[in-house]
Image (cartoon, rainbow, N blue to C red; front, side):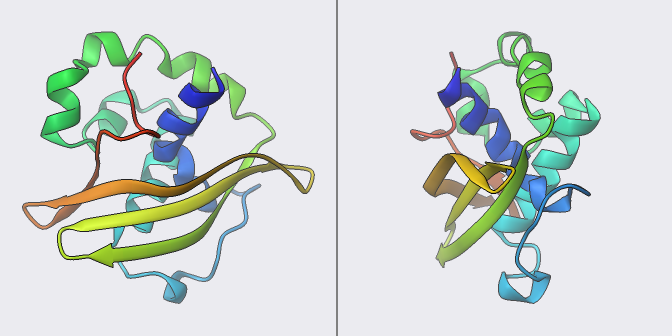
Length: 137
């Protein structure tokens, strides 16, 4: 379940956008880069906008994990995020690949961390890619 928290919350890593969350200033990351995508994902997850969230994954991810299978865990992950904030700690871009580092934090304690969550630029948009943080169970 912890892995699933990281996965869907990568989408949730968009957590810097949360009122309870903390994140680096926007100018620390590339505007509209992969860190911006993870922040958008988090806001969609927390708002229960699962179709919008699913749209932020690559076609490769979707071919392995169809929406009907993926959405089964989304409400559980959403509930797990209550009281937890996301802090994006880094972003690296290498051509069409982007890597995001982030932490899930509650009361100053790091509960989970990801380093190098993979995003791909597809048709000019950064999307979450299948990797060790973004899987389908």
